[in-house]
Length: 324
Ligand code: DP6
Image (cartoon, rainbow, N blue to C red; front, side, top):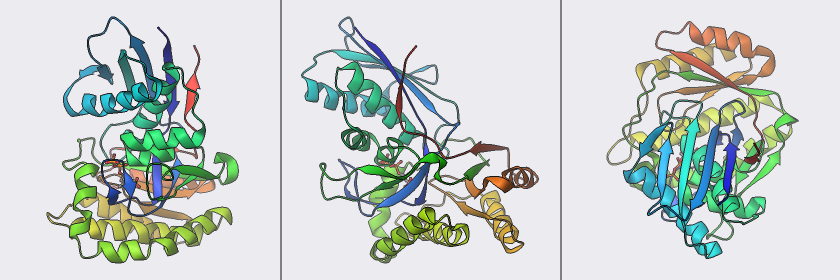
């Protein structure tokens, strides 16, 4: 009986994944680009145990059943299929950041689980196969497997839809100041959101334009061109939220303070501060800036009404095993 622990970081998408080509395998309708978030992490321990009558999950020190356990079991089933192992597992996982609030906890959760479960079952997967396995748990999890700045190529099937690093964490001193506005669990999960994306007449245009946004984003990272990055990141975020709002039913993740932070960020940039915003499927605002101004941005954000807390994250490394 081997116990394996893995750690991984959530990631913030600069170019967003929204909508699936194949929902069951999480093959996305468009490619995406993200940055791993150092300092925020998920630790997951997996033990395949002959004494267990079923898979068990403890999440943030609470026993978890229902849909969360089913998703975890589905990934364990894949690992069991890959290895022929016929044992149930105890999975114990915890996050050091609020779960389900637009900080992609499912991304770090399934990246860490893919690594811990495959290793505990005796597999040594390369980064590409690990990214593919993580993707089957949660799409964006495939981007938490490689380190630093990461691109997820759409691919056409399970084989070629995976993520790879486009620049290491120390390539660019970017900081994500996450303005926490609410710690409530989001009302509509991204699974339902991906399913309804196609009901918005704007989704088709968003997808058609995705290669342009991906090219610009990749180039601005490689050239460390903050102003151009800021423009494309905000445009991509606005396009995804326009699709969300115009889907059937309409999805509104923003709180009044979300818009207040967005407007403040635009003003600060106009005044010369290298800063921009992006928002996932939640109300919190990820405020990206150069490290040289992170303290000031952190302070400014705390002065906005409705901002409960600010988490600071630099570019993070890949998912990795932990040895005790
Ligand atoms: C808005 O990867 O969480 O954060 O595959 O259903 O688990 P599932 O969805 P998920 O979707 C992420 C949506 C997003 C944008 C992004 O991270 O690219």
